[in-house]
Length: 127
Image (cartoon, rainbow, N blue to C red; front, side, top):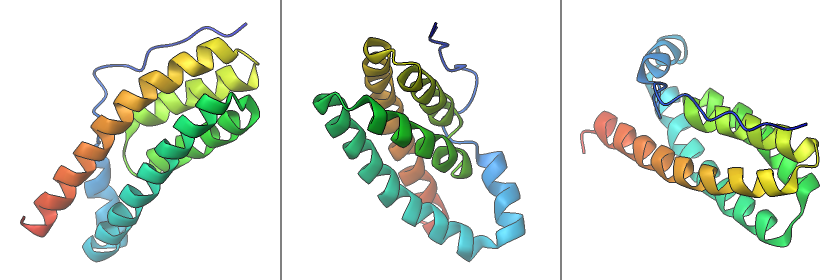
């Protein structure tokens, strides 16, 4: 039986420490490109998630939730990744009502994540 676990509020929306370590491995230019491309991809996937929820396509929601777990994690979006893991689990378990509720939670976390990424990108570009 599915039971929703609220993402830990003490986790940052965007883990800048993780990004600093990642940038140390990849280099600043590659990290900047990764984040800029990730921002575009994230907004596309969040839009798609809303479409799937409106259509009630629980199987596709599970797949997209799984994709969001990894994508958000790689971008340092810790809270979004945790919520997407819950979404994937609820959808896989067939808990459609809970999955739809989590999509609403992800909508808010997604907006916060997009804002944090934009601020990060503005900060590294000086602008």
